[in-house]
Length: 330
Image 1 (cartoon, rainbow, N blue to C red):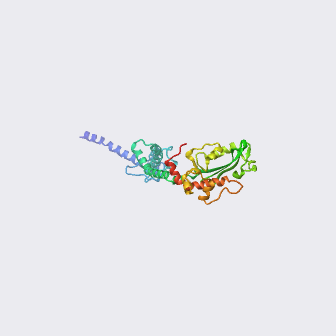
Image 2: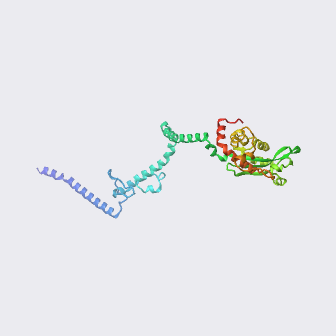
Image 3: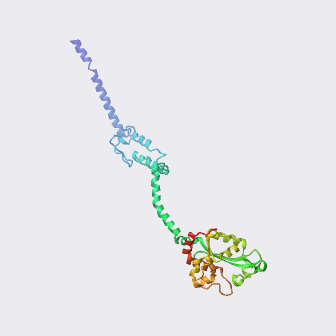
């Protein structure tokens, strides 16, 4: 029995070890709390954020456990410095994700600007087709109506030239003055021109050209290039305009030429035979109630060009519709 009691007495050391272990743990906890109060373990002793805990977007944290090194390391992994601006590095993970989303969305339109599917192209065609019929119908009606010609006055000019006599006995008509006006009658060009050949007859009674006008006159070749720049591509109105083109040594397309001496509706308005060649002076007197080419000082090419344009405006609508139905052949 004594032996058994001795064995039982030797079996009690383990509880002493546990007591010693509890004492060590308690001293460790005291030292740890002491260090925490001193602030030594603030950067090392951090715990991961709980599953139910959500960080604030403005960068502040709810608890001390969520403000440690593990949280900062997670933020650094999400907020990549070369993708996000400097302000997003200080924000929480949610703010970093928002910044990243904005960065990637800024690049998305470049990729989506070239739709590959046929369904994406369909709405674009429909949206353009909604406006297209209106523009097409308005353009087609304007081109068939008289308004189409009134909307492009900058492409219509009137010309009149004055000639002098050169060559044998002055029988050759050479250009000595040229005037060009726009649709509203404003002068675009008006110059005296020196013919390449000596002048034999100034024809002052009709041309209004005198010797002093040729002193500072523009040489023919220079004037010709200046005039053709104005006439090219435009509708040119004139009276007996073939004489002006001949003096300019120039051929203008018939589809862009309007000769008021060969427009039957204009003659009808003036109560003249349709196929007759009526002078500019007579048409201006009857239809515009104005006298031109009067006196002994000669004609004014500017005045004649302005009268020609005004006469053409009287029949512009009717004559342009006629030309659409019966286009002239060049």
